[in-house]
Length: 382
Image 1 (cartoon, helix red, strand yellow):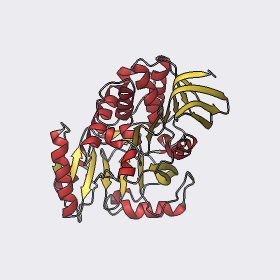
Image 2 (cartoon, rainbow, N blue to C red):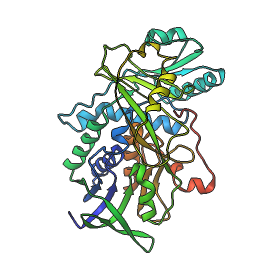
Image 3 (cartoon, rainbow, N blue to C red):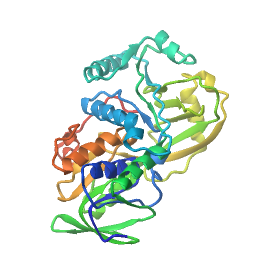
Image 4 (cartoon, rainbow, N blue to C red):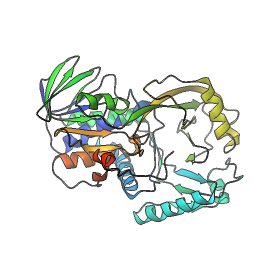
């Protein structure tokens, strides 16, 4: 392992690898990425891997729009033999009360003003897109056909390959043990494979980000929480878009291989990085999804698993310079949405580091916002 680096990135998920790629693309040399396991071993490899532009805040819409544009070009940007399995068949978001309808209509106004092609649907129009949708109680829906789903493993590996081709070094199975801080700066990263001096360190450690920040002497307001997910047997294609119901709290999509992936957010879930799964999740998942998509009732579940959301008080990430430690940056606290906005976040942070105007302004997502009480509320969080 090398002894010195200009930039050390801690975490080998989609955020860390896309950061390595974009920093290298900006011309930064001697980039090192440290991953304690294999690439995408944490939250990235355990996520639903959906990508959507249907948000209620301008910043989130722009981050998602920029990210999807990059996902669309990723094969040309970084040619590999990996199939990203990018399925752009849309997201359908269901509304069951007037408050949600009004919110979605406000969202659509914003999204369309930003050049996002989204439309409002009546229940009957929604059923033409998802024929097995039960429209009982449904008032309306929104739909964007550019939203979709990717393979999280091949997408992460593609960014890693791109970073490596541009000179970045990636060390897997390398655990960060401590950070040495002197005079308000991180001087050295101590690992189980040796020590590396650094000019700049980026925390992209996902569910382990709080521990990494504590090594830097910073207590960030995040916690990790288990989220469970399942996949079914493969059947013929019957559902193109991801279906989301904020009322029922679930998301459900059919992959290009024909299996269904689905999950929901449980307010009583375990806090921490435990990724064991439970039997009652299967029952609760069925209770939530079958009233809306009843034809899935006979599908066999192939397996289930769990991952960790790294959650902030406002469910928005912490991005950029920590300010308290001069050379310690953060890309953490994505609250379940890191995969879908990682490319734009990586690009914006890398542009900021080299002194450029970022493509998307992420300054409002600095750590200091919590101290000042400037929480950012996104109305469309699953």
